[in-house]
Image (cartoon, rainbow, N blue to C red; front, side):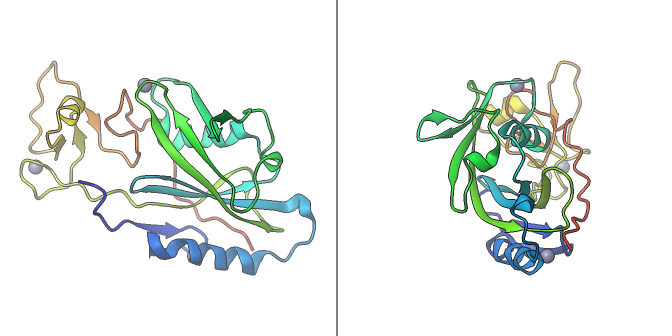
Length: 218
Ligand SMILES: [Zn+2]
Ligand SMILES: [Zn+2]
Ligand SMILES: [Zn+2]
């Protein structure tokens, strides 16, 4: 249903839209050009997180901890009711209190798991490291997939805004537009969100306060 979509995303450095296949090369060219500083203290990792058609590129400063990255992933993608989460490499859990520079290097891969019941698995990959002089504080989103184009399953015309988790679990088309959704009191529904947790557990996107702001690196 979702995998066949050609997903695009906006580069937040120049605010132009690219297909997911060319976005990475594009972001790297910005970062290479901006990497003129020499102090290693200013190293930032370009990190990609992927779940199916959903992706995010983060710029992660050297001094961040794994719990900082955990917080960012929870905030924009994961958090429904405070489940456990872990970064795993070769079946070993990475200590959340470690600084990422103790573990990360260009090419490093690990898996992030949120919720050990209805688990969501996120592939994390460190794409490269850049020594930058001007960067935003903390971890920033450099790019993210545009919201998926989900149409109402009933009229098949309008944009879906409501998802009925029960129908999702039953394998039916669970998406409805505002007009086709007939509200009844005991029915449980969620908003359509730009998250791989959509439809899972109690996820409703309420922690996602991403404003899509431009990222200044020069
Ligand atoms: Zn750009
Ligand atoms: Zn939950
Ligand atoms: Zn409809």
